[in-house]
Image (tube, rainbow, N blue to C red; front, side, top):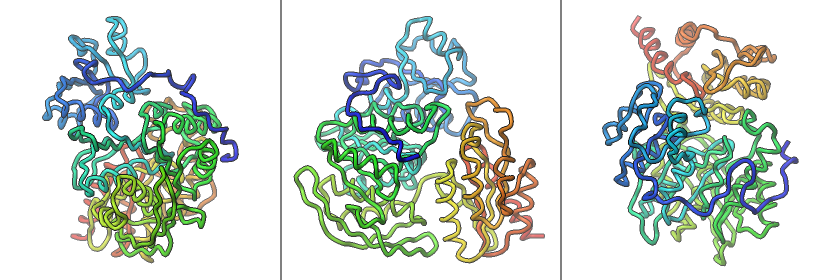
Length: 494
């Protein structure tokens, strides 16, 4: 499918997103109300606006820890959603998931209020900062978090908005003072095409694969959206891509042909920043780096050794992207390599939930086949010859329909994978699409688990000291990590 990548279009987007003149200004927005404020993306933007001293309100369908945290920061949050919640509001922020019949959105339309997409709201918080926008089918949250940690460790105190809490910062968003050398690191979500609104100075693309076909309709439209993302960059911007990924590699070739500044990274010999000699030991991963590239009239070259405190080759690749961004701040290679050691992970990205009798339980947000494959590779690394058990929850009926065979292959890396029923999120069921598409794809290691508590009990009973257990998926599977730890404790005390 990657050979379907279209010619690079450096114009502003057409039907997928409305054109815009510039980033909106916060002062124009007045009192802002977020419909669905508890979500990862919306809560991050709400935090930024609260830190900017704005009046923020919001609503959500249910109570959550994130909702309560926003209340403590000064937001007025209502549960459940109701048309009365937007009285006295100037601007209403929505995501693509909010439908026109939502009572708050319908009332906002009736009152003629300003209604903006969350991407426009995030763009408004960026002011005149130098923006690093991180896009890709997967790896966005970890890579953008790494970049934020690196730039912070280099002394620049960047603003950031990412999809998960960063270890050490204990938040997914921060607004720093805007000055001449201000940086803003943003996770650029491609799921609805809105990632063209940020006008980045540095555009990072970790990979380009078909996903979110419920929105895009075809792989060609996905690839075209990434073309538009690069087309939205500021003049003299820099494109940073992983040359190991076929889609990102072709995107970088077209970007170079179009005259853009491009820096690639990866294990391939052709990479401008090359990773080699990767070794892994538990959660520490060391590799060698060699870099040789010129961008914006400056030459960068040298060699060094990189130590990262999160496992897996995919994290080494993410770190290479962060290394390039660190160099672009004007810092030395040695300073950037040292800054990378400060990164300790983000929540739900191979996060250790507990250890009982030598059995480690990790949780990971992976919900695309490539992400699942990489997460299980990390699990295998930590298991180091012991068994790997996985409790997986597919996310979206449409994604399961498109990729069930690939999910099965990725899950077969475990000694035993249990597949829960599909988490529907924003979708209605699709006839004939169930988790059994995955479990009946021909891999003996992959089993259907219609009863999640029974699967938890089975995993706890089978796991032995040295084994690794993982909960994997973007739905509520994360809740079962604590139950597995409890079941392991019960087993140890029996």
